[in-house]
Structure formats: C-alpha cells, structure tokens
Length: 208
Image 1: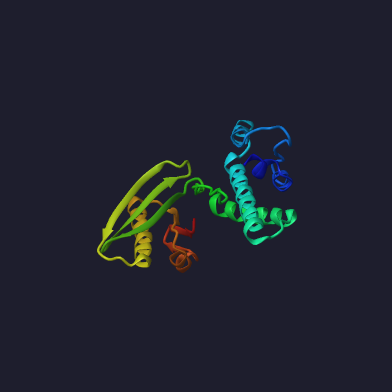
Image 2 (image 1 turned 135 degrees about the horizontal axis):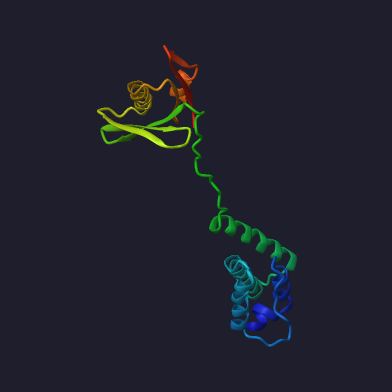
C-alpha cells in the first residue's frame, strides 16, 4: 500500500506538486500512518492542516482511481494531467468548504455638530402590527431620550414615515431647534431630504 500511495513514481510526483512542498522521501521506509502523522504535526508549524489534508485526500483519491483505470480499463497514466486534475478539484472543494470570510465593519454612529441633536428612527414589522422607535443623542453621543410607539398596521414604508414623524414630534415637544434625523428608508429620506423649516425649527434628513 505504501508503494502505491507514497513511493511509486506516479504518487511521488503527485505529492511533490503540492503547494506546501511536502512529499515522502523515497526509500525511507515510512508507513502510511507515519505520513499522516507528519502532515498532521505540520499544524504546529502554522500550516493550515484542514486544507493540507483536503489536498492529500484528493491526491489519494486520484491515485486510487488512476490505479483502477490501469487495472480494469488498461488506461495509461499521465502525471501532468493528474496534477492538473488535482489542482482543479482542490480549488473547487476549497471554494465550497472554506469560503472566504468577509469582514463587515459594524455600522458607526456619526455625531451631529455641536448644539445639534441627532435622532435615529426605525420601524419593525411583526404580525399584524409594527413598532416604531426613535433615539436622540447629542454631539457627545449621550442619549437624551427614546420614544417607542406601536402601530396597528404593517406597511413598512408607512412605518418608516411614521417613525420620522415621531422623531419630529418628540423633538418639537422638547424645544430643540437644530435636528438631524437619520432613517434607513431611502424612499422616505428622498421625499424629505431637501430640508424642512418650521419657524426656527430646522431639520436635516440623512441616510445612515
């Protein structure tokens, strides 16, 4: 078994093709289990053993299938074709089994200018009703107030608009004159982003 999977000319060249540059030494006499332990211990050296073992599995499978083709179908082996096949299979398996981790930066809250307040508002649909909420903070990030209300309908767009209205009502009630209102509904913000002035009450609408 060791000669078939480790030391024959065909197997030797397949192992040498690995991106890690590891291969069994000819005439060393090591057993298959020794080779498995050697590969596993490379993990302590910082090698990605999961990907290494995946590549090794593809090599072993290729050797076995090539051997069967020779024995049962009288097909000759081609080392370069086998290496290309291993590389192709390994790449496909890695894409499925080890998808790249995408770093998603957490949303960052941007403070308003000094003497302004910023209100974040949103709507959440659930069942046959929805909840709208507003959260007001000053330029230092300190929470000034929060207001929550439940509505007896479930249209998300109307809910986002209602959340903006709740933000305005809560602000006007407290006598703040300079306000930034942030909402994640582009349609609602686009309808209001040109600015709204009510006496000394100045409102700017922004998307997060």
